[in-house]
Amino acid sequence: MRIYVASGLENRERAAALIRHIEECGHSITYDWTKHGDVRNKGEDVMRATAANEVEGVKSAELLIVLLPGGKGTHTELGIALAANDRKRIWLWSNAPGVFGGGDATCVFYHHPSIEHLSCSFASLQEKLRDL
Picture 1: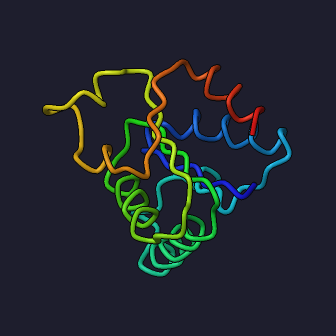
Picture 2: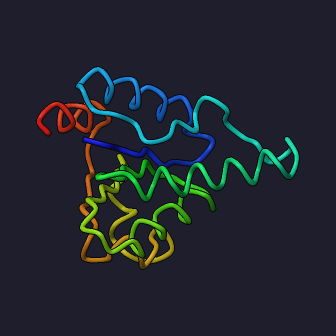
Picture 3: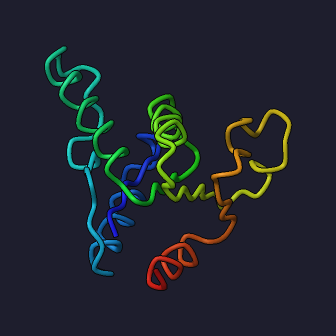
């Protein structure tokens, strides 16, 4: 399965660990942003190329896994996946279940019918990937 992992820069290490696990399970990653991390101060050309690569990574994935918390880029990637309207699976993971409950901790788009909420440990998320 082709998978893209989206998350905030503060979750880079966790995202990188999940990417390694996904590959060990025999799946492919459509784009690994964790290899370069934050490019906001690397110049216009690098930011432009990174944006294009990340958009293509999301669009070409069969499964988008969003690790919360996420930043602006994470939420943009979630929007791209929702707008693609191509039966892409979307998993929204958090080990803090309150994020799915409503109020200030949530985002209305977390509740789109295309999204599957995963409120579990990181180890349980990894186990779910073994079962794909």
